[in-house]
Image (cartoon, rainbow, N blue to C red):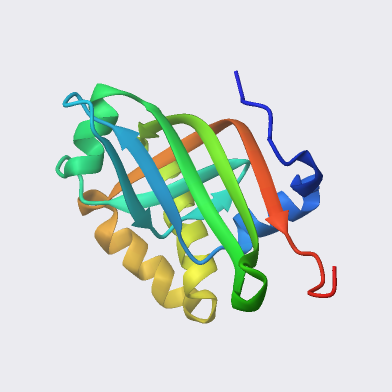
Length: 161
């Protein structure tokens, strides 16, 4: 069950939440391992079909080991941010998604996710991206997060406020 946002006047509208997810440069994936420690790692991602996808090395690594232990994750994206030193505050916008992550095994799902990543990060190289996807499909791990709930929060007031 999601927590109530303490500063509810800073809750972002849905269109802003989806814009931040679409346009974010990177996100921080947070998992929990069997040792009880949380693990947050920045990853490139794409938000497509109401899910978050990211790539990784197949079958190895800290995040995959944690996902084997617990599929529940959070994923944070920070949009615009500016420190306002004189006001002892900052202007920001961020989104936190909560959901379940899984490793994709179906080649069609993996292709779709890789294409979404290529279109986000290298849109001017579509043809080369398609070739790269085919040549690297078998040696690339892909995860997806199915979002169960999310919150968006921001402090975007004018400096005069």
